Amino acid sequence: MKTTIVLIAVCGLLEAGQYDYGVFENFQLTQELFRSEVAGLNLIKDILERLKEIQLKLEGQIVSKNAFQTLRTYKKTLRELTRSQPIENDFITSAKGLLMILDTYNVSKDCLTKKEFVYSDPHRGRVSLKTHATFEPHDLMTLADEATQIGWFSHAIDLTKSAYANLNVKSLQKDQKQVMEDFKSRLVRTHNNILRSKKRLVGEGYKVLPYLVTDDLKRKPTQPKFVKKLDPSKREHKFEANEQLDINEDIFRRICRGQIVGQAVKNQTKYQKCHWLHQNNPYLRLNPFKIEILLNDPFRMIFHEILNEEEMNWLIQYSTPNLSQARKVSKTNLEVNRVGLPEEQKRKIVHKTVQCWIDDVIYNEEANLKKNKDGIFEVQPYLGDQYAHVIFNQTLHKLSKKIQMATNMIITQRWSSTKYQVTNYGLGGLCETHVDPFGIWEGAEVHEEMKEIHSTGDMFATFMAWLGNVPGGGYTAFNHEGYEQAVVPVRGSAAFWFNLRSDMKREPRSSHGGCPVLAGSKWILNKWIMANDQFHNFKCTQEKNVTYPPYKDFY
Image 1 (cartoon, one colour):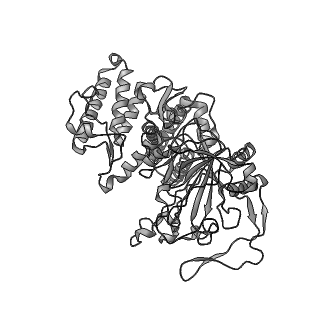
Image 2 (cartoon, rainbow, N blue to C red):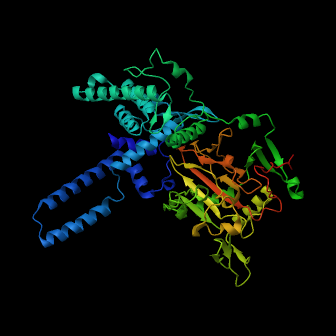
Image 3 (cartoon, one colour):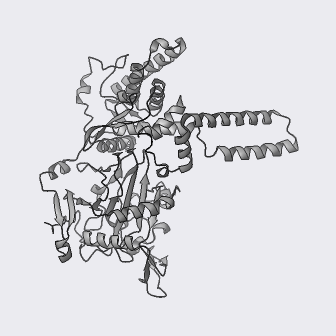
């Protein structure tokens, strides 16, 4: 039963023949799964079962000195053989990932058995994607069971209802039918009890429908009065502290499907959005950039067609064999729960696993930074010219100059911006919500891994470009209340926004995350522009809560 689930979870969203094995974190395993499908997984399971039988037989024998050594060697070999093979937890994780996609995009459960995915898109409404795989009733029941394990009873009910609609109940054996009826009965009872007691749709460890259901999973004709006040399109404001994580994640997914749009974003549609940006530069007056203003305050915009084909192709070709799969645990993140560390000093760094960092220039002499008595990392004297460098790639270096001209910011100096970061997200890939800057002017404790930040300043602005279109999902969603917005990825274009206010404090309304990829894969290019070199064109002030104005030099 669970064999089919993992295949649907990772490959059922696209037409056959459109797979790109290289976009997944475990290239080899994914390629094997796609090639062999169910037969391959069954073979692996059979091998594992046979190996376990042999192990039990060996353990049951009289243990001599030689037999003991043989058993140790066997166990070591078994671990090596099975380390990269699918295990029960892989099926569970795949099911949870699929449930997350179903929830994020409000996927129609009734269409899962019809070789199509019908889902909600923030800009296109209800969209249908053709698939090559279908869900059988037992797959739907397996998913429903996993949904109950994580408390998503609303999805468990929809999946169970769809399973019954596509199942010939008369063909079931008596004990099979009884198992399904018992599951359905427990599900209805649990769901209705939670809704009656909590009187809300989402909380710590639960998600329910906005109405009570009958024994046959339909909406009850008579509902309590509080049900009328439940509105899935609005944010929850009254909740316990332990419920905040579940509610915030649910809000983010609702932004990803376009169910929540901030009032400031709605108001922005009253103004002209598209312009030709020239930054009062004589060259750009003849060759301006295409821009689309998403929001004036805080400033959020799109550079359309800013990357050309040569740049995008080179970035993907160079990055593909160099994508890191390491799961780094930052020392900064380990400090989050440290007893005694003040809240204003705690930070969490969001790490992306499938990424590649690229320099456009390489400096001849590496910077030497040491912490002084005040805890500040200072640059030690250089032996030669600290700015002497070689150009690593002319295409990338020209791109840096282009971004510098477009943003009117300094990014080509040594401390003015980060390296380029190319990140790839496969099916279901997402990025949790966060703000980019570290908050060094708010008292954040700086560890060795972030030592250059005292020389660069904090992340002043973000330039995030898309290296390809995404067939489904993969939006960038801003989640601060009142400013919610889902931005569609468009090949060759780039989102741009300010991360700091004029007093160098973090702009909380820049909080954003990456929505799950529903179909295909997502390639993005990031470059963070650092604060210390921007003071000439962007003055800092001591006045609080002052945002930098939007660009105004355009046609």
